[in-house]
Image (spheres, rainbow over the protein chains, first blue to last red):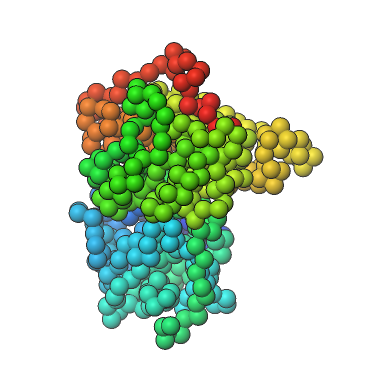
Amino acid sequence: MSDPVVGVLALQGDVREHLVALAATGAVARPVRRAQELDGIDGLVLPGGESTTISKLAVLFGVLDPLRARVRAGLPVYGTCAGMILLADKILDPRSGQETVGGIDMIVRRNAFGRQNESFEAAVAVRGVPGEPVEGVFIRAPWVESVGGAVEVLAEHDGHIVAVRQGDVLATSFHPELTGDHRVHALFVDMVRARAKADAL
Amino acid sequence: MSSTPFDNQAPETGTARVKRGMAEQLKGGVIMDVVTPEQAKIAEDAGAVAVMALERVPADIRKDGGVARMSDPDMIEGIIAAVSIPVMAKSRIGHFVEAQVLQSLGVDYIDESEVLTPADEVNHSDKWSFTTPFVCGATNLGEALRRIAEGAAMIRSKGEAGTGNVVEAVRHLRQIKNEIARLRGFDNHELYAAAKELRAPYELVKEVAGLGRLPVVLFSAGGVATPADAALMRQLGAEGVFVGSGIFKSGDPAKRAAAIVKATTFYDDPKIIADASRDLGEAMVGINCDTLPETERYANRGW
């Protein structure tokens, strides 16, 4: 099978770091800003950034609805931090009019770990990522308040859920793209590969 | 302790990665100067990635004259309470106590800014000693690297705030970009001399030569008044844009703010920039920088 094409939603946020991490895991990584750029991708990353800004721009430029449709149709997606918020079916404390893509049956709390002064690094053991715990970089990070039955909890920090997976949709509160350790991206690209293989059958 | 099977260690706050990583999250976005909670909400609704809380926008600081200082804590707290996006605030250059106060108020980023009246003519604040990250202005690569050596986790051009004239920000970004391109062609022997010439630590100079960019995020600041200005700065290599007086000194702030956000995201799409530029009402009037006396140039503040 040829290398999977994985897009990074490039409306705002740490897009470059995700492109680098994806390329390092053998995917063909490309930025996605327009609805038509969703065509031809096998997977998508929703980067860290400001969730309110990203969702506003996604609505404004007509990306949100096509993206929702693709996720519902089974497109593998991975969201970090703001991206996790966008993948939540429900936000606990949304700004008025803040919309999400959805895809994971969970409720997230934005900025749950506090403001920038409380942002931190901690080792996090992630189910499905072999070897040492990953270096978790949490920046004004959300956590997951609660999950539905179909959601697998992959990691917790201090008693709070910080990594989840439902089907081919993956989300982390922290930013593996800032660490140079590409194991979480490798897990996601494996999900993308498996999905593409299943679709090809 | 949780009874989960997850093996976690004690968290560490205020690391370089957490400080610089915060700025990485702002990339591709617009940071707007605001003076009231109402303006902060307008900025957030328009899609700003952060707001800069201050008492007077630079255009008014220029007009009013006198000593410009850190803003009133009540005013900063009012803005923090009004929005969920990050809130930045300015300290005077070298005024590390203003910075300590801002940190205690819980601002997300401190701008050690030449827009305020410098408190120290020799030294900038030691930014490593803070948990809160700092952004600093620079007119050239040496200045940017000196600020990073002092702990700045983000760099912006100095522009010429409060003029509505983008010419100085263009100069600073081109200068930084050209100096980085020049380093790329240097071998190890030459990098030592370059460090001396740039008056910056050799290790940082070497890192920049290898990366082909600063090791921290680079934004544009100063003089952006239109969507096209914002897109110009991004095409010149800025990873995002600060807009000061340009929004709330214009005819229709909410509309102009949203338009600048759109043009910053689609900075390479002239059609979208054209659409964003339509029917925005009056832009701020602006000042020609070559008529500004040297003593009134903010870019000359800081060293």
